[in-house]
Image 1 (cartoon, helix red, strand yellow):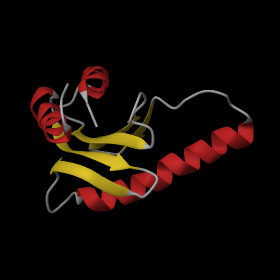
Image 2: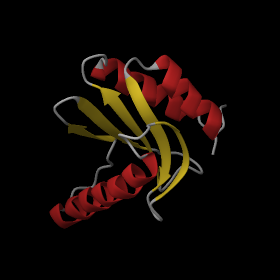
Image 3: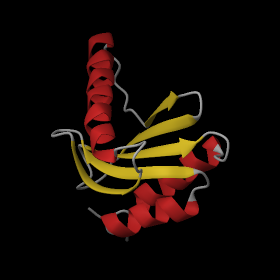
Length: 124
């Protein structure tokens, strides 16, 4: 089992094209840990903004009467992918992993696969 710091480092090193990664509590909008990012990507701002995305999608699913769970949310920009993976399991409720990827260097399918593996190894 990996702690937050180890999981974020794993994402940065094992996923091709990663710009930044964060573990976020979407009940508060706070980043519990971040790695990467930089002047062009403030991960604490991204954490708060993507919390609104998760909440909006959850509300929409509730209004539609969908009795399913969100696995991940993909936002595609001109040069980047932004992947939000909601965590499930004991102690992980209310959390998501946020991953920003360089579109030119990333393999989206592999990134999703690796992020799921990291989620399974994460102990919060």
